[in-house]
Length: 333
Ligand code: SF4
Image (cartoon, rainbow, N blue to C red; front, side, top):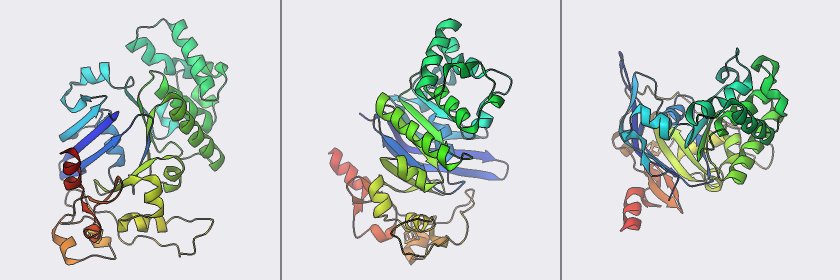
C-alpha cells in the first residue's frame, strides 16, 4: 500500500478578489522509501500541495475537495487537534524553504530540535538531547553544535539542522520544499546526497519540491510536473527527463542549460502562467503552447496513459494512449 495517496485534491484561496484555484484536482501516490519530485514554475501550486499534505493551508485557503491518505488515514476528515496528535511531524514532516527563516534566532538549535520530543512524547530534556546528538551526527554535524545559535552556523549547517528537525519524530514522509535554494553548488550537492541516503537507509519517502529540474533529476524516482494548479505530466523520472510527452515539460527541459551531449538551442517559454482566479478554458497551457489546436481552447485534456505508469494531460497524447482514468478503472476491475 502506498504510504501517501492523494486523490482529486482541490485547495482554493477565497480572497476578496476572487477564488484562487491553487491546487485543482491533483492526484498522485508515493510508495514507502520512494522519492517523488514536484516541479513547475513559481506559483504553479507546488508549495500549496505541501501545505495541504501537512494540514497547514494558511487562511483564506482551505481544502475544498478530495482526499489525502497518509498510512491509510484521510487527514482531510481529521480535526486540527487530531492532525497534530497523529500526523504532523510523526507521520509527515517538512524541511521548510529557506533554513535561515525556519530557525528561531533566539534559541539554541538543540532546544529547537528537541521541542517535538518534549511536547509530543513527553520526554525528559536529557533523554531528548541524547537523541538529538545522535541525529545531528547522522546528518553530518558534531554534537557540540546543539549548543550554538543559528547565527553561529553556516548556510549548509543550518540546512542540515532543519533536516534533523524534520527527522526527529521518525516520520514516514518528509517534504523538502526547495531544500537547496540559496546554497552554493558544493553544499547543494552535499544536501542532495544527504537526503538520498536518509531515504535509502531509513526507508523514508521524500517529496522534493523545486523549480530547479536538475535537483529533481538528481534525486527523484518519479516526477510530477505541475502547471497552473494541475499535474500535467506524471511518471518515472527517467521517462520524464528522456522522453517528455507534454509540451510544457518539453519546453521546461529545453529551458535549462546542459553541459554535455545536447545540441538544441536554449529557449524560454513565452508568456507567463495564468491568473488562477480565472484560468483559461480548456487546456490551461494553451495560450503559451506552440502546438495549440482548436480542441485545446475548449476542452480540458484528461491524463492520458502514454507508457508504464507514465501519464500526460495533452490532446496530442490522445492517439498514443488511453485516458488514464479509464486505464486505472480497467486495472482495478
Ligand atoms: Fe498544447 Fe493542446 Fe497539449 Fe495543451 S492540450 S499542451 S494546448 S497541444
